[in-house]
Length: 296
Image 1 (cartoon, rainbow, N blue to C red):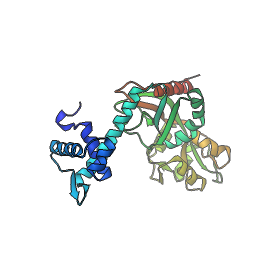
Image 2: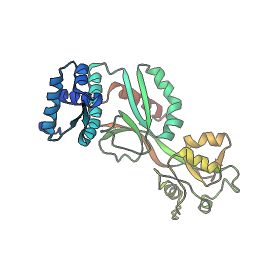
Image 3: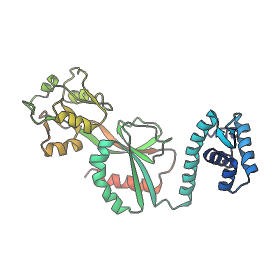
Image 4: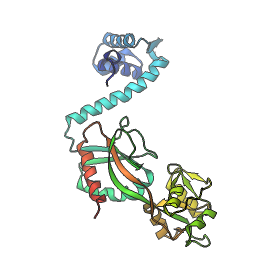
């Protein structure tokens, strides 16, 4: 529900206030907006009366922001920017344009990026902008059109497309004595490396092979790449997705720590807000991903 109208200032008043805050004078703001100085002053006065707070104060010949004004202008600049972009989008043909996508670092680097050139060749009219996020987040209030999440589809306010399960394998330094072990329970005697966003990954891996032994705490990492480097240097055994582990295994930088491998502890999903129709760039990207991940 949109807020009551008494809390919604006019766009003209917001533009006048933003320009005056940025330029430091009503005269400069008037020149930029093709208005008179008195019109700018009236807009700001009306805005202050509507909000019931002082936003600007005179200091010599300049207008300066109060503390409330400083916080307010920061918020309205974001709103005005999003409003302008929404207006541009509404006026243009959305079969071309941009797709702002939030990705998980390892998935984006090792799985999506090597395939993204195929999408660009098929859709040269669409620019894909990528930004990394480590955890699921509320996409409705974000600047993103869609995101790659990992988990179990318990996110509110989104539709989703299942992409692929995350198959993980235990890996260790290539000089670890005895590896790969025939009996996975041998890993209980080794330091186990953990990922912040997968705190129960090892426990789920052991449970999947019928071992519910409680696990001690271990070193914690925020990204797979850092955890892989730690495993390479003998700090412990890492549980990595196959698409992350394969280059290290192929180059001999890591080895499998156990013969029993290939357990799934969750899946990757493309998610997008469910409160509005998908724009053409997102629809094209979603269809492309469906073609990549559909069962053969």
